[in-house]
Length: 357
Image (tube, rainbow, N blue to C red; front, side, top):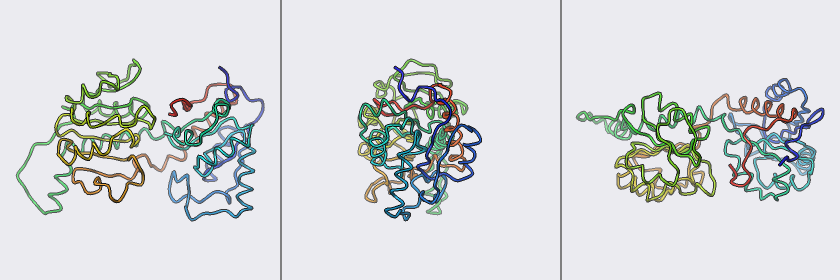
């Protein structure tokens, strides 16, 4: 079924920048797709503290008049570059007031969760196209995943503990990734890059998918429901899953109990895909040998979480995807999609508004 967002556009598109975007990148978008009227009012956008800081400096605030001006700009858009203030409530507000809104580009690769949180009506979900920045973060996250697998194989926790204690112990054997089997849970854009990099290191890669598909570097494809049947034969599990109802707690106590003793767990997807209580129990018992975690069920990670202090855990504050090129890559992706919309071609990275990924 054709929706308003799928129809070709005559002439120009009015785009309002609703999240921080440096002026040189605004100019880059205009250069890449000259048919855009790219409206931005930099004084109404919070300053960025670092690359990909799309919420901006938390100390930033607008006066009542400035907020009204910002909302009027947002409500005049056919297209929004970013969810206003990265706030689902602000998205809901403008979707209700702006019947001409056709497309929203989210900054997150997993932007579907923000769309779901906005609680939009079925009419709004049909009228407005939502796209994510999927693909932009794949390379950095895949490298972190490989780093986590290597850290587990090379006994990083023991090395760090002995260095801290100034202990020169006897020698011990380390794992060889080239001799290991790794399960990659989720073979979207990130998972495919993880599989390719692990395959290049010589690992045997098993992957999960709900669909029968051929993925380079993956020697065996299994359904997510079969994970517990296969984890006993793998040395490491990498999850790249999005946060959806179907993925919540997919890696649970049954999976960890069935896993090979000493298994490495790496998560670069969404924290909700792992039952954290079950993971903590596995780490405390030693059945799970090591975990490299960039994401958590609730963020920031609670100061009371045992994960902070477990010696066989590496905590990364959801920063593995961040790199200096991210803002530019999202801008380029947006410009490419704008061209597709103007020319009547399907948008890349459309959010599935049933499962919201």
